[in-house]
Length: 169
Image 1 (cartoon, rainbow, N blue to C red):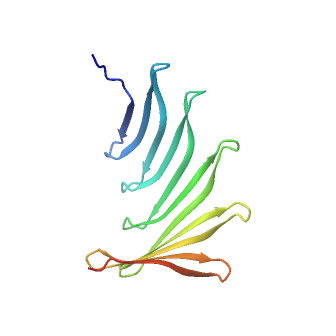
Image 2 (cartoon, rainbow, N blue to C red):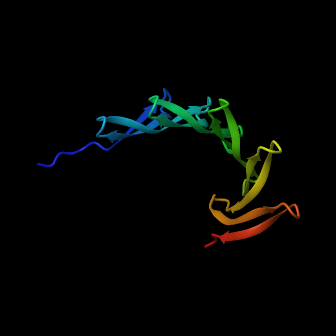
Image 3 (cartoon, rainbow, N blue to C red):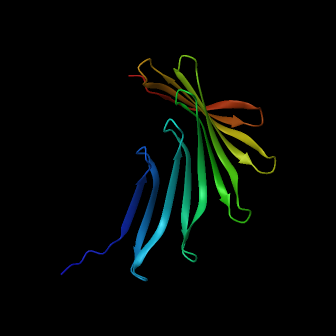
């Protein structure tokens, strides 16, 4: 007779507004015969139900607790369009968040062009350094028509086009 062995368990929790408040994965360990935490995500939302925080945790087998790992903070315009994602990692020695990367989005007045700039945090200079730029053009009905990817050239202090994707029919 074959007997099913538990392997993976996922738990989802919703907040009072029906938003995902947390997600966790556990793997079954035959020895000691229990569920062992793998990853956990916790979410926070603003009054308009836009996600403003995603925190990631990993399971510490020795102390049996969830430890902070990383987080992403989100910022929005009043109309709900996202304008920034900032990713940080947890410094467990100093007990503080260390900035790692940031994605800033800008929209043209007619909303047909979206520009996104990737930056990373440089500890030595305590500043954000831009490295990628994505520019997308959209049709009036919202379909992406063209995407151009640029890389920052710090020698000449200019964006250099690297890739262009044309989605026109």
